[in-house]
Image 1: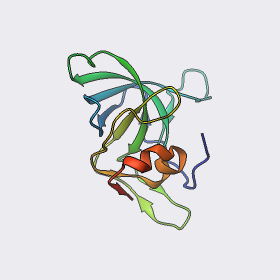
Image 2: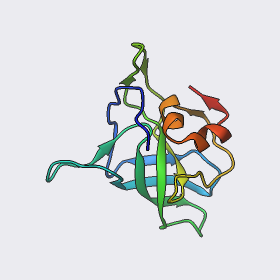
Image 3: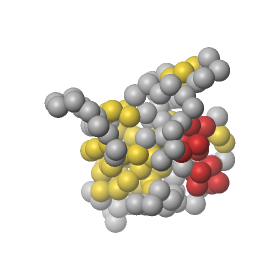
Image 4: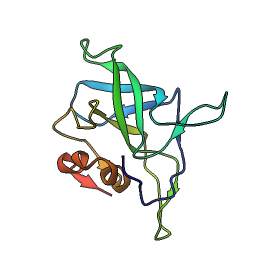
Length: 132
């Protein structure tokens, strides 16, 4: 994973619910862990846009339901600051499902995608309709 250019405020933690913004079949995800997180004992792992999380599917296709999947966060409600001084926040918390290599499982992404997620995972930028 590459470093991102923004000073990321971590707005997603373990237990957060995310909207699935792709056409993979899942609609609602719950974060169960954060990949590559090194933290303090008893502290809940947190991450922001561009973070790799492990989730369970709470709503969606019956085949996908209760499945453990990997995802990348593409939007967060919590405001964060970019290097140029601009502050960015979105309406919802959303993620896109990926495989173990970091490639996107779906073929279409609904809604805007943060530039920081595309910097880290270039395959997201190839299928995104709008990058903010």
